Image (tube, rainbow, N blue to C red; front, side):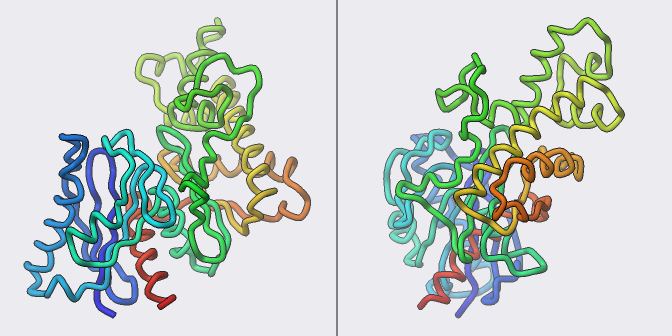
Length: 316
């Protein structure tokens, strides 16, 4: 088995990793995501970059073992993308297209799901069943069962951010529904709730100074300093997160929840506020699932994509 590539396609950049036959990262780099012409240049640009890397190293491109690919949208188990709106992609086979461009085996999955595989593989102790929750601009998720990612029938497994958690919500989520987890526990969700509550309070607090350009980090920083309103906002988001993960545990029964994304940079406070809620509402047989913070940061996608290749080669 020769070296292979892990590729994480984002809306702004494509992150690429070159991995050894045993899955160790040798080198990583980025190229711009060219979304012109409905994203038609993205895969050819990736193919060209991979070929150029092999040329620089004096390697035969045709002797590489394969390409793992994470994309920001639903991907079926056979590699069909069911639209990536932020890339301009419609429905097509991303694996067949990239295979035609490179001549190499290609294995693909949703970016959050692929990141879950990367984070799980990076753990010190082996874990076969885990759930990654990415708390960023939105809330995404990835599920690993028996060491492999769960695709679902149309590649939409792990959409934890759209679990319904609140019946009284009047604003619409990005998905078109109301009361989704994403509206409370994402970075934008924490800010949305904070601004609504600030409009209803006359009591000055630490958050008032951050009102114009508030971020989720500001909210958590103020909560750590004891600000009552900031703590109320953090508690609300973590309450809904804990409830949603209790629901998830009833279906998936994971050993571990991994909390990632930009909000996870708040640190232990996120687990300290979420885990007790989870324990309260989880089914008793699922209650012992552990919580950890993600460790790979922006590299989770390329590591997970690489793991797609490794897993495929192991089954041959």
